[in-house]
Image (cartoon, helix red, strand yellow):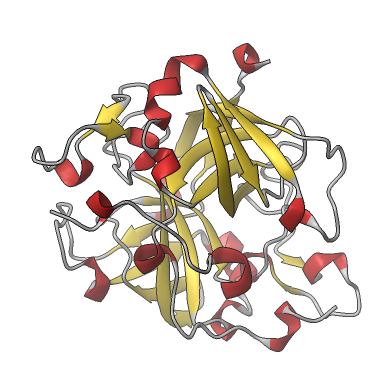
Length: 150
Length: 150
């Protein structure tokens, strides 16, 4: 069954515009970005501004599929021992899809203005979803110590 | 710029196995599923069981791209007025990628046992990430009333 894993074809629905041309180590929280959506999908953004936060799925296009290591040092910090890549948020993963929860500041036509999106200028966007606390968050979630170190 | 939206090719990394053959209206929270990952990626799951919760991105393969309406009735409930599809979690969206936060019960080799994954048997999995509260959740997030109605 696993030997029949399918190939999946997506078409980007929009693109990130901001002033960030190289990934930041810190400070994404305050970055303001525009998510410019294909004008033909503009109506699909209606009602989104009734939510304070949204989820953005995006394609980390500088990281190609199929070239990912199975283990990485979290945040590129060699002082932290290697971890399985699925236990990290490294962009260097089998399918380099990023997922961010961001504040929605404004919607104008086919453009969303968001705060906290950790994606560089020109990043293709795959999907936009409303953030729903009872569904998207987990109470009392446990994480290992290395996730907050370094 | 938006006219040059790229096509994105992904290869599923695994597949969902459970007893659910048709989407449920309610009750996903208690569904236990296996996520069986390509054996060549088994090592990439190391350290994931140090987290209580994980995020699963999956391909809602019964919903084809490019056929999505821009507006839908949330949860198929016609008593709720049409909303922009990106303001809903409808699977019938331009790129039918699902995102679930689930409890990780167990990891054995290339198999994860999870609780609360709202995906039917045979669903292809795109990515697995650790759930990190400070990054993935938003405090005091606001949602409209219709999201919890009906």
